[in-house]
Image (cartoon, rainbow, N blue to C red; front, side, top):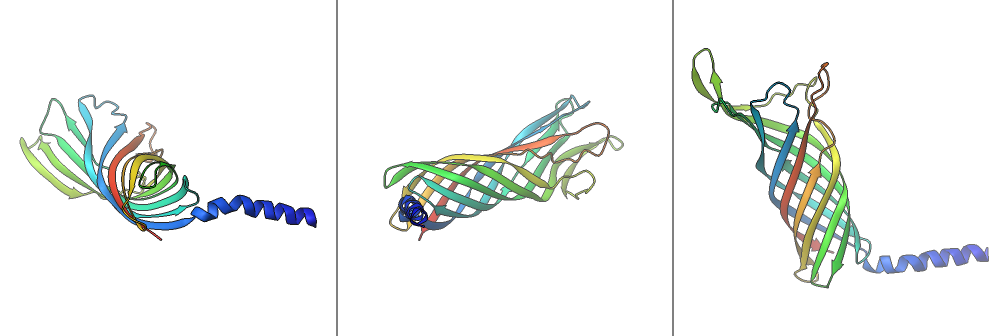
Length: 222
């Protein structure tokens, strides 16, 4: 019995440094992102796939376990846009704008002074493809004219994969504005491991997003 009590006291003593720094914080984030879309063009050798800028915004919650360690979860809306166009026939220019809802869960490591600190976020994220829109221009071979495109993407459950998942990492700086307020600037990367297309045909067609975000955040620390 004495051994159990000693073990319990030792365990509580080890937890005391963490409990002394434990505190909650909530905040909002927003910024811009640049998405790279990779796909096998198969026979479409004349097509080019270019990245495009988008926007990101969300809310964040963080639990500081120790001075250097925290657990963070965000809920954000992030655009994953890209452009597909032809080199020879420049009138064919497709611009895809895609909205995703994402939930990254990360361990946050930090170091520095009481005012200015650097941090590194590492974890995984899950996402869902909310909506898509196709813009740009196309060429009508029958009428020999260029037509503008501006339409919503209608999802096909057989060919479109709307779930997303992958690792996420970020580097940033935090400045404490006061006892209860902090501002952050962060560069973050979402690396999708799930193809946006389902493999329902004999020819495999894998397509992936890699999204880099530059965002600012303001946090209230309890």
